[in-house]
Image (spheres, rainbow, N blue to C red):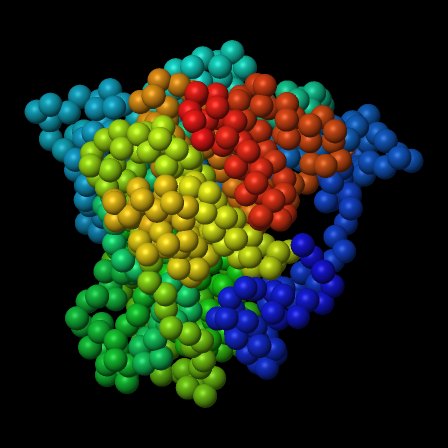
Length: 625
Ligand code: SF4
Ligand code: MSK
């Protein structure tokens, strides 16, 4: 965790990161690590969640001397309200992304765009069937219109359950109803959380936390799940493919464009544009040998999963990618984009382009992407990148390493295909103890940690213990750079996992996508539970977000726990000022939903904690170790 003035070797485990941090020092560029040092030590009231700014009788902060705010709220209520609003931010982020996907799909269904199309018709019809929409003998676009409306309904306030609730094992659905945490509508639960946390509403900390669980379940089983399913329908369901990762994917002699954010709606069009002959010719006229597109963070994950586009880096690599001096343009949609990228870009020749009205950055150029102009805008942006190439100063370019190979593209469908079409081989391997369990390692980077140290070491430790690891989000880049996302990585796995993955030709660490794609992990867990005839909470599963930072990561953790999966976090959210919320999160929830959080900054100790939990769950199912 945070130390004062860490040297470069202590900031990141990666050579490419360290080399760029040295270049940043030489070039006089400030990074997140420097700014963290300016911000530490952090405010203890904020860190423990006991500072309230909900009304103007305050702000109030709770201490021994002043245990109640002006209105009489104590630490438990204040922490619960702050955490409830923190989770609401995460649920809103994912789910608004999901809504944008529905709007794109709606435009396709109604013939309002020539730029987007239905790519996976089979998947669309399968989901329509699943959600009770008639498909027999109907025009594809008529089915699509009804499906778009059905998806919109999951955001509304007139239902008792969101549409995909049928995927949840029955035992759990009943439990959610009993507890009053069945998500009714994505927007409804977020709005209700904002209402409850207004001054003078929900003044029972545990009750507020339960609404946090309901709202987060709405994100996982609706907002995020819809985002994933529509992205597959519009851009193709991912299948296994090769890709490459780290800053070495940037090219010295090509126009480099980075796409960053989360939603593939913009980046898929940019990908089409960079492959257009006329634009490649233009790049050559300007002296480049071609145009190179690479991803960052979750937009990178989306493009890599479906198209094999290389990944330049995760959250803490975004500034460092620009510091190579080799990036002409960074094109962003939304979420997890550091405002500092504009200033870092200004230190070089890198231009930042924003594309969504809801995510504009002062100093960046805005090129608005809409349903009816996606391709035209993509071409415009690529032309801007080509122009920018002429401004590159070769003396300031330093691309630090060779790229590392990785395998990607494991949608739930692709994983089932790899298993021969059914979950039976996986269930047999779990029963035989060859695969002792599975853990989803998800989420971010946080400069409070040595970059990717926990992400990589936890992954390595778990596969040694014959635990299959699934990665999404920024952990993917960490696992990929560590050489864990290739079939050869079975050499680092325990004997059982090595045997099974070796026979299937898959890596012991499976990449399932971006942060919204954690919905794929939920779906897979539900399929397994339904197949065995148990609840998700009975399975030998766990989740972890070792280096998390964002509201979205907290919401993911909460819907994963509420869905019955034990979840490790490297550090707690800002809740430690409330004994009620802390005790519920770290234990009490187990009695209610069959899972809880655990906190452990050391990845080796975290692996032991997760292993213990998996042993316990195996024992509960009567499985031998
Ligand atoms: Fe203070 Fe209560 Fe207002 Fe919060 S809601 S700022 S604790 S008076
Ligand atoms: S981008 S939420 S840093 S995973 Fe999805 Fe990465 Fe975490 Fe953002």
